[in-house]
Amino acid sequence: MSKENVLRVSDVTMQFGGVVAVNNFSMEVNKGDIIGLIGPNGAGKTTAFNCITGVYAPTNGRIEFMGKTIVENHPSGKMKNLYKGENAGKYTKAIAPTPDKITKMGIARTFQNIRLFSSLSVFENVLIAKHLHAKQNIFTATFRLNHKEEKRMREESMALLKEQGLDKYKDDVAGSLPYGLQRRLEIARALATDPKLLLLDEPAAGMNPQESDELMEFIRQIRDEYDLSIFLIEHHMQLVMGVCEHIYVLDYGIKIAEGNPEEIQNNPKVIEAYLGVDE
Image (tube, rainbow, N blue to C red; front, side, top):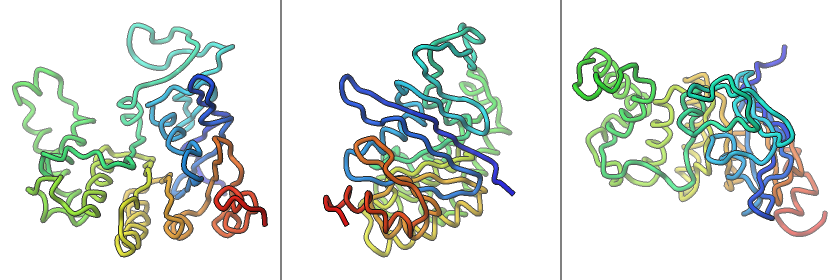
């Protein structure tokens, strides 16, 4: 029985002037998958993430999430605008929602360089993310009339911190936490947006070996507990090979290989891209 498709990237190209950062890239993530994207520095991995999450509008290609086209650009064609606003329902040359709209659809991400609200508390970082799906309007938010919903979000934020073992740090300033805990908090904040797909951009960056091992187990844990699909970029090969079921490899923006960890480890093109030698 085939798995439900969560993310499908089809022929995505991202060009900056004369530089093609991602070239005709296609891949997919199915429900419950943990998928890796690897490649040497400058291979185009983060650019691919940025196209998926609305940071960049791709030069060409299509991205589908849960069976719905969310990003599309074919310069020679026209697509119907799917989003609210004055252009809703009109035809356009590109569908390119902003990152906040992508997040509301159910795609959350972390960043290689941790982007917490470092001067706010651990609890406040998670609560802010919870507000993404708040049903209150500007009036009720301003005058704090919707106490019931505010109470619900605070309770859910506290429950999430407990689930992730961060509750004892709830009043600590986020920027004062050890690096590994900051990374865990950033992931917890992403989980607070209730995603169906979680994108992790080099989650093991800056971690020591023990923290990396703990992260590997943590990724499996949140996949199972939150019924997530996970797509990650990582340079830490032990983590990638230990946690990913399927891996894509980029080099100079081009997909040069895909397969399970064993296939990738023994792929001559991958070895050459990383080591600069043929085997």
